[in-house]
Each structure stands twice: as structure tokens, then as C-alpha cells.
Image (cartoon, rainbow, N blue to C red; front, side, top):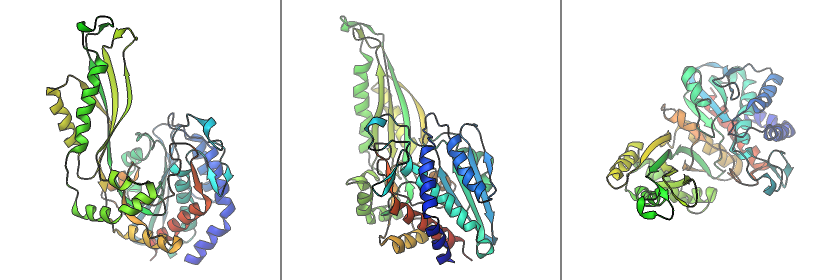
Length: 411
């Protein structure tokens, strides 16, 4: 049966590439997050195959799709998860190929979202398509979740599914094709905490600086003290620490030198700052937003306690914009072992167990104690210029997902 699956993949080579290119052309930048055209492209494939599905919507411009196949009775339930919204494009004229053209050139498909994550979502779709043909050769249940609103961690995507139909989408394992590279299998992620800080003063005329402090000037020492939190010691769970030490070289190979250190570090990025109405006025208000990334072993409560202690030194207010807890599952879960085994056999590369630098919807399964494994293409150009996925790499990922899903559900 594995040989049959591989034959179907090879027979569909041109179909898969054409589907992926048209998927890129169905532009779905978030913001604004409208994924109706991208979801229609997904629905057309499922309709062509006669596969039943249903849409689950909180916002009609951000639809989600759920499809399930039940095989012979066993406890296993594998969920395939992918999202269809992508990062926006601000500098289209600097791309080698148009970001929404879905160009096939230089042995790769090019365009915004092809790595993050329309290749991975296409892989999930075709995996579901092929395994649905097998019927009673498999056991348990296979569920496909195609979601919106992932890029902003919004409430309209996978979070909505867990709100309204958790019994359908939780499963016993989750397989996701977010960018990881053929060198790594992700079993966890750092957390993220986004905060907005506001400083206010009396303000005044710029020629009379003695009448009031400048809110912008006050922001800088606060930022320096916030950054001190990145130097705080913490303790990783021993199993996690051992896996990350063993995978350091692979993490750097996949994401660039230094990535393995970052995966185990607290990091802070000041992403926005605004203040002052006019050049010749003392700024009476300054507002800046900070993105903290928290490794496993550091909690949101740790960071907020640090911030509260700074109130004795600085006058400011703040609000939490978004919070994702650090998360990880057993590095050697059954699904992780299956994925690594198939990846190595297909590519000749033994992928290492790693923690992701960014956040994905896979975290939502891990929060519920479900092993969630990420294996996808390299993040070339992700969120930047000239995003692309090599065709050969895309088919390696497809073959690995199809065979791994089969192995997990095989009776």
C-alpha cells in the first residue's frame, strides 16, 4: 500500500504543482485576513474528489474547513492542520518574481505564503485525499483542518474550532507542515508575549525643556530595564534540554548560525514606537510595543512580575496584546518517531528534534496534551523578499506526510 501511495503522488506531480501555484495566486494577506478566495481554491479540490467537508466560521471573511474520514475502529485519531492566511507584502517591486504570481522558476515555486504555509497546507490536503481512498486498510480517524487567522493568532481560526467543535479536532496526534526544513522536526515552540507600554507627561514647548520631562526620553531607560529580563536565569525541563543540546547543529543548519541559542533564550524586540505631536513640542506621550519570546522554563507570570517591579523606578502603564505560552510535547512520541524515520528514508537527512523559534497553531494541540509534530519546507524568504519552496523539497514533504499518516493509522 505504501508503494501505491507513492505512485499516486508521482502521478499527481503536475496537478500538485499547479494547485500550489494557484493557491499562491489566491492572495490571502493577513491583515486584512480575507481568505475567501483561498478557501474556495481548497474547496474546489475537495469537491473534485467528492470529499465531504463543512465550513466553520466566526467571521465569514475568515472561513475554516473541517473534513473527517473514519476507518476501522481503533482509538487513534490523526489531525492534519494547515492555515491559508499569509503575511502581507509591503515591497512587491523588490521581488525577483511577483509575490502573487505563483511563478515556477529556478526549480522552485515563488510567492508570498508558499513557505508559510501554502505548501504545508497543500501537503495536508493531498495527504487527506490519498488516505481517504484506502478505506478499511486504515484504523481510527483522520481529520483535516484548514484554517484562517493564524498569522495574527486571531480568534477566527483554529482557536474558534477548539471553541465550537473540540471533539472533532483534538485527536490523539497532530501533523502540521509549517516551515521547519528537512533538517528538523519541531516538537515545541517558544512562547510569545506582546505588550504595549504608555508613558505620559505634562509636556510643553520645546524651547522650555525645564517645564516637563519628555515622554520619549523616558521610554529609553524603561526599554533598557525591560531588556534586562532577557538575562534572567531559568531552568529547562531535563528531557527538553537534552533534546535541544543534541539538535543544536541541525537547528543552525535549518535557520542560520545562532538559531539554536535563540531557541533557548529569552528575546525582546521593540517593534513599534510613536510619540510627540510636533518637533518643537515636548512629547507628552510615548507608546511602544514589545515582543517578548519566552523559552520553555519561563512563564508569562515571570515576565509580568518583572514588569511590576519596574513600577518603583518608572512611571508607565501597559497592556497585554497577545499571549502564547511556551509549549512542547514528548520529543519521541509515536508520530515524531514515524515522521523522522520516513524523512530520513526519503531524503537521506536524519532530522533532529527541535523547538520552533516562532509560534504556530500546533501549540493549540500541545496545550491540550496532544503530540503535535511540525515537518515542512525551509523558511526561505518567509515574511521577507522572494519567498520560495523548491519543488523537490515540496515533494519530499508530501511523501513524508502521506507515508507518516499512513503508518500512524495503519492497522
